[in-house]
Image (cartoon, rainbow, N blue to C red):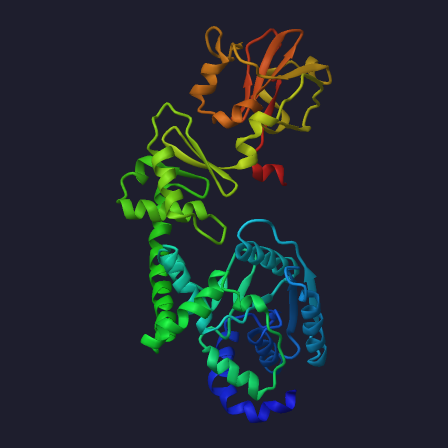
Length: 454
């Protein structure tokens, strides 16, 4: 098949090779490429072109979604074509979760890509100009904003992989021509023509009607996506500034947030909720966060769940909390247990990692290596904090310390013979006044996350 290259050389140099060489300069010299191959014309053409351009730096992967009776045979076809081109090939079977079939299949596919991608390896996908135009049109019909209408980028840098789409500016007609000139063998997936799926409906039903009226529609929509990418880049700079003013990836300060105008509030909230995921929340979900959480009554415990996180307002702050952390209070029950401490040892408890060390004022050394009792807070307890006058409700101390409600179940009380020695809290160990207090004693010291990994 490589013998077809000389006849193809003129087009190759002008429209594909020159563009690829320009992009290759942006990658490390050590970069190699993993091509996602479905067996269709587009991906098989890309496989052939890259085998000419970088024959020693290319691998291929076929993801079998097990949704078609012929999917296993298609994997064998891709494998055989790769063997002819002397390209290593992975055939990966995946299970597609229930739900929107197109979305779940895409998610399973990208999980397979992420699993097999190697350091310094770039994922190559064969999306072309018509794919870009279809994506923009479908997102427009779903009510997408700038982020959605930016559609696909030629170079897409994500958290765990970098994607390159070398054919994104090439028309489908040109791809068909090139594939014919190179005699590229491929398979036909019948779902590409099944109008039950949105993209197939767009391609088979809507596309021809619009193109008969607007012959250059494909190029125009593709150009719009690039204009939206410029707008998205500018908007991203504003978002970073707003995020720096309002908080971080975990929390937003609502006092400053509420001073932004409504469009900037919506954009910041949408981007903040997206986090490291690929897709932003829907417009309706952003409005629900604003109406049901941010603008809820101050004394309410409003919380809204979306995409594995709970969004909660507390003390004029909006928090983004992992689902398992927020619901831990309902599932984590810590039984009364006996515990012994040694000087300089590290101890892992519900509220954090502690180190036993000497302090100016602390517990008597007689208590080291002695059986102490630790139990979960039940409610109604009183504590006489060292240095303060009299006992007061532990609940009040917790409220004054602004310990998050979803973390209060981790508070544990340390005692011996029914004498309270202190309380382990997410804000540290609260040392209690007792007969066991002495100068130069010891206390558990809460370690920060950086210290726990040393």
